[in-house]
Length: 414
Image (cartoon, rainbow, N blue to C red; front, side):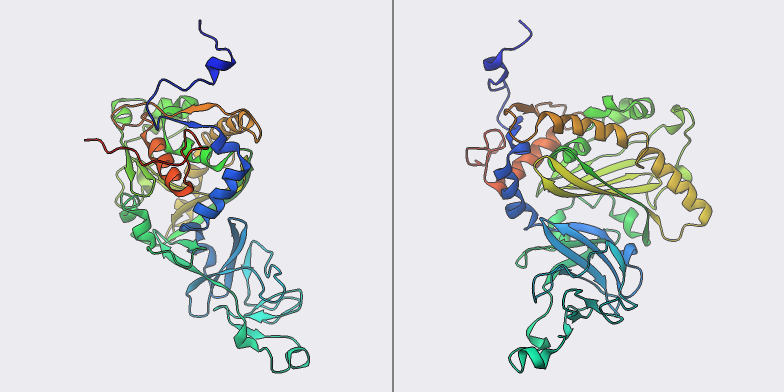
């Protein structure tokens, strides 16, 4: 009998521990709230790229685990991150996604962050520099030095990405957090300054972990006609998935045969520094960021979980800041033909994960999601997902396969 009744459908798979997860981890409200507290508020999260804050007094705003964050470049050109919250009445200080404080705003003065509610002002180091009608209201009971913005841990690392943590007691640098996962691309992205040339964002009806999964394994290349035509060969199938401490995964490279797809051509002319022609590396960082270097363009996906069944993804395309106008146009065309909002591959990925999201909405019946493929840790092995969910279990304290049970460290294999 091939079809299954309800009991058979819900039976435990005939697989080993760690080779499947319960779909409840994608749809349960309580588990989602635990993830925000136990994972997203504890980790290093890349939030933007330094090229988006080129000048003194430039800023970007974003959200981490529902906390509003602002990143600013000071007069000293140093990048700092703060909670985007006024210490007076808890108002969000800056609501624009990006801009500059070099000129005055309607409520404030140049070179200050001004809360529009009561016009309290702060400099680029988070220091309060003006409390309106301070003497009349507070006399000598409160002054500017008694208040200030909450500064967040931040680092500029890996080709100019700005990393922020809500955890004041985080005990490792970004380099230590990465545990070697970024090393394969470090020579290429650190050789010279990079620049964001493409940005778009999308709110997707799926759990953030599902977007991670589709980046972390290439068995789903059966979804992508372009990838099959330009890649399904012995070199492609030999690519390695390598797990790193902390749940990170590095997908190894091979030479993409772009000319096999009608209208496409080799990208070797604009390869990133130290990257062999037409190579393609991908790095997935726990808990939810992807770096994807396809020869001539670097793509990053930065996730902001909004709910069990909703995630905002910010897609950036990056090239070399030294690009000539001609080279930049070519690089943009290369990026957008694959990864732009109407690119050859990205739309197919989004269709796939929204199909998963539609089948795993909050309140839906739990089912087993299989991660049991073993192919010597090569490209169609699902070891990357097994590695990721093992780390997820450590942080959340739940078994990915049986989320109502506590996580148990797997037995070491010889």
